[in-house]
Length: 140
Image (cartoon, rainbow, N blue to C red; front, side):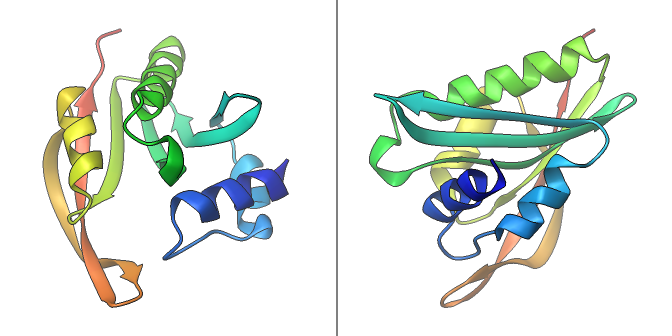
């Protein structure tokens, strides 16, 4: 499973893929939540999160390039939001690259608001990109 997650993450985030060992550590974390989207029997996207107590954090949410703009990211996000709510979380956090305009639009459409910034957080082949810290307040 961790090899599949790593390969899928690499397809979604080619600038900074997570190796199988990192995926194994994430899956083993207390409060891990994960979803894989399939389309035509092929893995099309993933969402990985961790929830402890009243807070959840999305660690990664991505869709393979050939399947983007088809609602998969929105469905994965809705699944994670629902799972976090069912676990009693009141707040959901994530970081998104400032230059990832489609992802920022997705999160805004789902009610996330910016609460912070992390300079040079994401590695890029051409340098770095800032991360925007976003929050969604969940009604329980």
